[in-house]
Image (cartoon, rainbow, N blue to C red; front, side, top):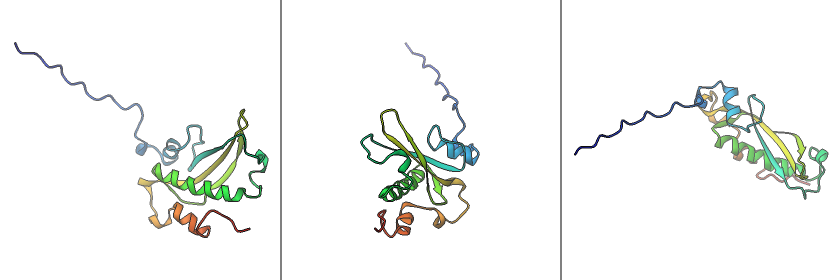
Amino acid sequence: MATKKAAAKPPPEPKNKPVSDLEPTEEIAERTAPDAPEDDRFHHTFTLPPTTIIAEDDWAKADGAENMHNANKTALYELALHRGLHPTDEATFDGTDTRSDGSVDLHYSVACRPAHLVDHPVIETVTPTVALMDMGGDTQTED
């Protein structure tokens, strides 16, 4: 007795367009934080535990914070590259928010281009290595 095979179902239609079909600012927003503004910047937030002793308002100017900002900016370049974005400028520290549990969110962003649209020599992409070399080889500032 022969059995009939069910016809294979076609693959489901994608719910969203592939990111490479989006406008550059839309694509960067897709590849960044869910609540980030739709602009030409990759946004990321680093969260510090509530035991941190620097007050929220002091992060932009606190002694020792520059080393931490340098390390976070360097990590930001790496995160952007891993998401298919080429950083094209220096990363910026964009401010802080304090959560209800006392932890502090540090917000950073960097101008980017989607990798498949890069129209400049790759040498102009800001990579973690380039950033570290610009800082003298590490993220520590001289006292």
